[in-house]
Image 1: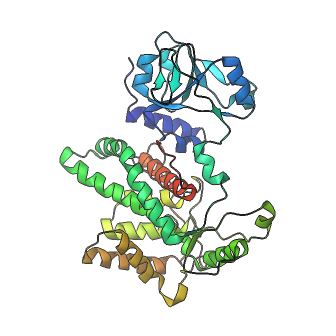
Image 2 (image 1 turned 120 degrees about the vertical axis):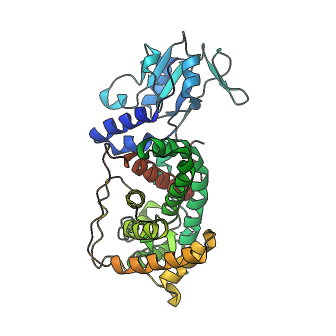
Image 3 (image 1 turned 60 degrees about the vertical axis):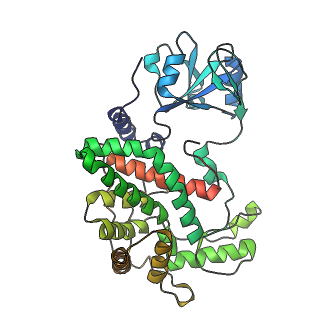
Length: 389
C-alpha cells in the first residue's frame, strides 16, 4: 500500500501550483491534506448529466490510506470539474491506485459501495447514493451569502474562537515543518510551535484591523444606516444583509482595508515575540486574506485611526486584547508600545514585503497562515463550519 503523503510531497505540490500561476489551487491544498472526498452514484452517465446541470456531488471525507486499502478491484472515477470548459467527461476512470492523490474527489458506483447516515460510507455495495446538492463550494459561501451585521469586536472574537478549533487540525503539519525546515529538536519544538500558533491566532484576531480606518468606518456606517436604519454605535466590521439588489447600487464602496494589517501585525508580533522574520510572514499572510495577490502597499495619508466617542484607538485596542488574553504587565506594556509605534509608521509611505516563494523555508508557513485567516473569516461571517467539518 502507498504510504500517506509526506510534507515533502505537499511542498512539491505547492510549488507546481505556484509556478502554474494558480493562487486558488495553492489556497485549497491545505484542505483535508490527508483525506480524499468520496461520492457514491448509481449510474455514471446519469451523474455526468447532473454535473452538467451545475449540481454538486455530496461527498464523504475518507482518510487517504483507508481509501487506498478499500478500493482494490473496484471501479473508481476521479471527479474533474474543469471538464465543463473542455467539453469532456467529469468522471475519469482511475486505472491504478498509484494515480490516487489526496485533496481530490473520487466517485464509486452504488453496486460496489454505499452510504447511510448511520454507518457512513461502506465498500460492500450496501447503502444509498450520497446524492447531489445545488449549493456552491464551501469556500464560496461567504462570497454568495448576503452577510450579517457585526461589530468589529464581535467579529474579532468570533474568528479568534474558530482559530482555536482549526489550529488543532493544522498543528501536526506545523510541527513537521518546524522540525524539518528549522531543524528544531524535540525539546525546542513544542514551545516554538506554541508561540507560532499563538502568533497566527493573533493575526486572525487582528486581520481586520484596517477596518478601524476613519474613512472606512464612516463609509460603512453610512451604508448600514441606509440598509437597516441603525445609527453609529462603536466600530463596525460587517453591514446587515441587503433586502434587494437595487439597494446595493445606493451603497458607497469603502476604501481597501486588508493591507494595513501588515504594518500593524509586523510591529505587534515583533514587539511581543521578538525580531524574527517568520513573524513578518504571518503578518503578510493576514494582510492578504482577501487575495494572495494583494500588493500590501500602504500609501501615505490613506489610513487614519478612527477614534469613536473620544476614546483613543490605542486604549480601545489594548482593552480588547486584554479582555481576550491572559497578559502580564510587561506584555501589556509591549502591546501599548507596538500600537503607538504603528500609529506613527502607518502614515509613512511603505510597500509590504513580497511573499516567500516555494523554495523559501517560510513558504509553507505563509500558505497555512493565509488559509487560517481566510477560513476563520469565512466561517464567522457565514456562522458556519467549513474546514474539516
